Amino acid sequence: MTTAPAKPRLADNPTPQGRFGAFGGMYVPETLVAALTQLTSVYDQARADQKFWDDLRDLLRVYVGRPTALYPARQLSERARRLFRPQGGDAGGATIWFKREDLAHTGAHKINNTLGQALLAKRMGKKRIIAETGAGQHGVASATAAAHFGLKCDVYMGAEDARRQRLNVTRMTMLGARVIEVQDGSKTLKDATNAAMRDWMASVEHTHYIIGSVVGPHPFPMIVRDFQSIIGIESKAQFLRTIGKLPDAVVACVGGGSNAAGIFFPFIDDPAVRLIGVEAGGHGSAPGQHAAPLSHGSPGVLHGSLSYVLQDPAGQTAPVHSCSAGLDYPGVGPEHSFWKDSGRVSYTSVTDDEALDAFLLLARAEGIIPALETAHAVAHALRLAPTMSKDQHLLVNLSGRGDKDVEEAARLLKARDERSPT
Image (cartoon, rainbow, N blue to C red):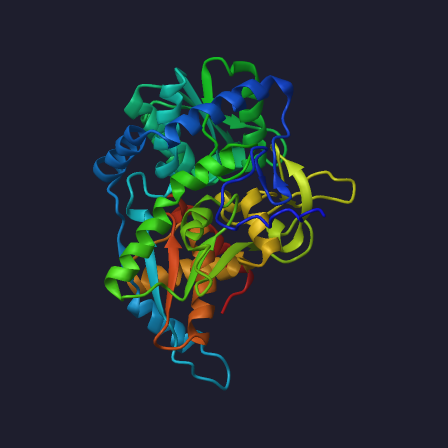
């Protein structure tokens, strides 16, 4: 009698082959296999080394400013009740809370991962790091980690993203990194990742590639998730200490998916907590108008792993669009794909206009200017909270601050006003 294989646990490590259920893996050229094998071995050793975690914990506390605050957005919650109350009903409306990753050093959650991976690079004896970046926050965090540890740093960034995130280009340069603007394709995050992968293939002996999200070949999705899980670990402890229970729902934006994986993972085995990922709905549901692979994509291989991908019938990666450079990506992390198919996490999308409205509403209601990526999560929370009861609590991962986006948001809002004058 044969025994059926055990169903994979939702909050487990991937298989030795890097699989989360059917997703993940290591689809790379032979030249990268040795580097990935080395990284897997070094990370396995580091995970078992208490000094590694003590060193990282000290950096996160003293250098990054962790733990980041848990903030009750009471005025925004009241605005949501008034503006988005369901027709014909009054559930009272949940209180919206923010996990303030925007208050971390460099202004976003990305620093949690880059410091951890820089420590791994030092363990491997690598003298140079490279990174891809879309919104620029991962590039800034990589440049910051490189400066702190005395490493050389090159950051690949699509030329279009460099245009709309010029402030972060300047920050990276001031930190000592070289920003290499990529002119290929749509000149956005996918093209920057392609260029970084090509560089790594030619320089693996002395270079470590700090992937910025839970994407790419094994072991990157696991490594980035683990380093970002500090967000969810802190959130659980803060909620239990502050209100005596866990939040009823957790919302986070999803591009590649690092901030969402970081806050979701510690809650995965808490079935009473709803988990909702919010993708970039762009201008609509037609191909090329959005960047929502979990909502509109199909399984395929992109940048070294199998996950949901936006692609045409021939399997070629489809064009994407989002007002936010950090969500402007045609794929998503394999663990998110696994969570989607398992039903544990639900995924939805928010349009550019909805994100821009949330961007302004949060700024004016609470005095907090969010990143445009984060504004997608805020937009969904504004609609979800009024459908919940008054004694419930909705946690949003405020993954980054919006300094980098104010000029682009102002341009987009002006263009929208000119199209539809009131």
